Length: 126
Image (cartoon, rainbow, N blue to C red; front, side, top):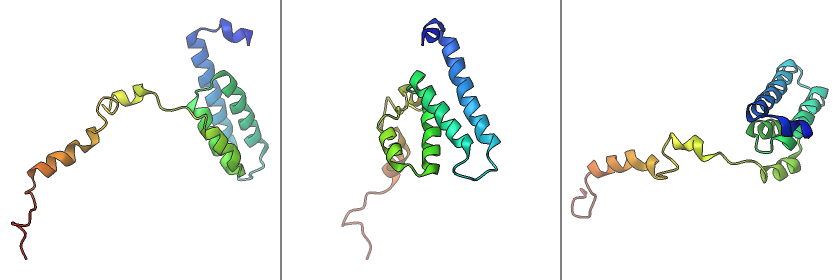
């Protein structure tokens, strides 16, 4: 833990990226072995759990854990873990204007409905 205090922000991000790459590489190595009790699955779980101690808001590690625990059928752990799953930062949505205007997705339908004639009882044809 004392080493982490000496790390710069760039070093921490690089260490997180290396950990995610290592997990993904292990997945690629065992991709053709469909055994659930494959030791590589447990090694990946250990790496993710250990990494979450240092990076508690890491979406890739939570995603990998969800996938691995789901493969092992550990539904209770997935439910407990879903309570801690980090939410998407507002920065992701800022480019889509969803954080500023939540009804932005309705824009096209509002424009289309304004061009359609209003249906009333007087203009309905039998």
